[in-house]
Length: 235
Ligand code: CA
Image 1 (spheres, protein in one colour):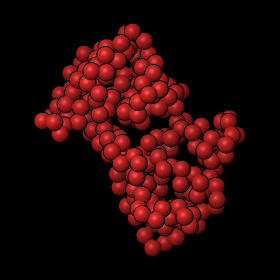
Image 2 (tube, rainbow, N blue to C red):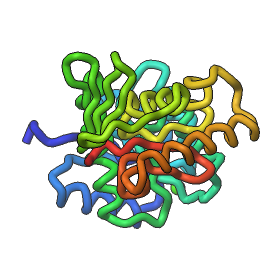
Image 3 (spheres, protein in one colour):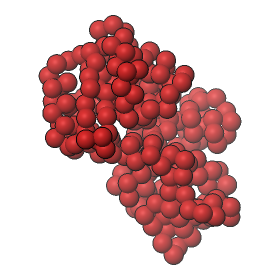
Image 4 (cartoon, rainbow, N blue to C red):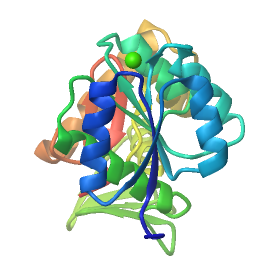
């Protein structure tokens, strides 16, 4: 079964490892697992998985140390499993290069959806959603990068330059949760502080008004309070 995606699960809690392994295998993924950071490195090197599901609290160190080491040379997608509700941990993992995270306890459907989304994004990372002629399309949403114009269906959404830059940036990283600091750095070339986060939130509120109901949770952009924004990749 060489066409199966191979997933490396790094998790020390046996009940979660058993649950996730059974879930993934039932969904046609091939699963290999590691109980800690050093075993994860060995397993990664010998199996070169398509995706890594990484617990943060591991017996021989923090999962983020494995992540930062991996990111020095590899772009393999990583979904972080975090028991911590602490937003700073999620932001840290995302800024270190995690593609997404799932907070424990999580449901089967949620984990599978994240896996599909991250794999899809990774597969098409070079040209995700982009049409010839510098266009991006997602459901009814079309972004014309050359003309800097946005349409939803036949309706043009009139954005300010800054609002457009935020949406264009999120679309270029479609499917990935982008932290406040990543967006602020890209759009304003500024360091992140309370004032710049406020500025971003005000712009997002204005974008939300212009997009109407189509922007929200079930729509084009997900807002994770205290973390960042994601343009949803599977519309
Ligand atoms: Ca753990």
